Amino acid sequence: MIALNQSLNLPPRTNSKPPASVSWAIEHGFWLKKEGYKESTIERRVRILSVLARHSDLADSEAVKLALARIDWSDGTKELACDAYALLAKSRGIEFSRPRYERTETIPFIPLETELDSLISAAGPKTATVLQLFKETGARIGEAWVLNWTDIDLENRAVTFTPEKRSRPRQLKISAKL
Image (cartoon, rainbow, N blue to C red):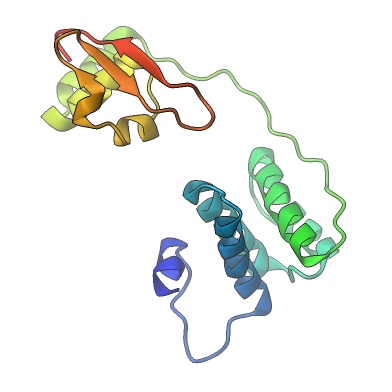
């Protein structure tokens, strides 16, 4: 439990009992784990619910909606907070009508190839290797993180990626430089 509190950046516990709402958020994290949610999803949702618990009573859905309206988050984060609270409310039997928050789609910044090459050349050898891998393959950080030596075929200059976030496994060619 202490490690969970530290990973969520919660203040250390004192002898006083935490508010019921904060304990609900943590209990909900354990419930999500049993339901098979990914660790990154659990951490984000528990963190969001913990913030909401500090601003409102999680047992009162109208107080949560008011807190969401007052918190200075983007609409995308508020939408994620509504998703997290809706699942908590469903598991606790609390009636919750979702407010209307929708993320705003933006065009991503795509740097020029010369800018990428400058960044790669300025990085240390390990970081430069990973950045070059990202540049050549478009892999996600999680896909690169779980690479094994057996996933790299030096003879054919190819890398096999294990899928992440409902994508497909794939094998991509890499340059001799990489």
